[in-house]
Image (cartoon, rainbow, N blue to C red; front, side, top):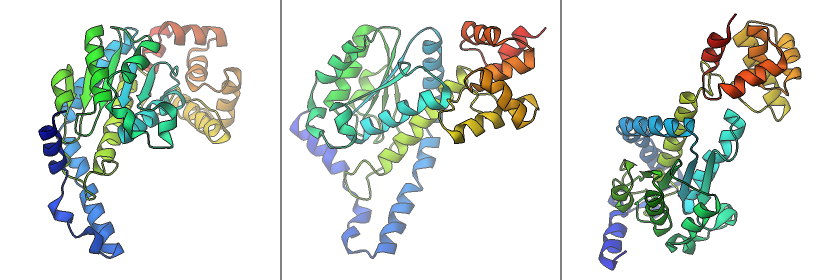
Length: 304
């Protein structure tokens, strides 16, 4: 990045409305932060058409065998890790399906490794190690859209023929110009100038949640508003799985638990068994052969 470009970027981070932040009492400070945070949802609402288009393209790619990679540094990378890590337990997806690449690796989740964000090779090394290919989707996250680590990943994705998507939070940035698709809301300068873990982080968290949820709905991983592929890895989630099966099948929770006990507490399989009157093996076959069809489509296709 040229020095004058960096200077312009840094100048845009200054928030004249919060110049007196250090002199505020605690309540005034919190009110100021809260007022700033309250603007984020409306700003995101304005880019819903862009988010919608991205979701449709990602779902199509994944249904055809692609994988989704989030790439980011600092706060952006940590939020990417958070969203990708939630997909397997929430939607029952393979951990390979939605992955995250954070500058500095796993160590950067707990400790700042900010110097790595200037690397133009590390993200490419990671993508190569994970065998990224033309079938995949690469989403680059960067508040200003100028992070070399993330820019390099998008450029490499373009070379592969992958679908590349830029997500920025201070309007379009350099990454928005090179990616095939872009979501570029401008949340404005932070209350604490330059601290993108605040409004920009909130905006990224919201958009990633919308994208992953929207994609999984499109892939049939949700029925009504229920997580029919939730991984019941603890007692709380076992009870949730029982309620899901009970609600959809119209049976008691104890009866739902009985069906779930046959299929390692996987709600979709229990529901297919109950609704279609099929064996465990048949339910598994239906789920695997119709991997990205919704539960309702699976029931309709296999109804007697």
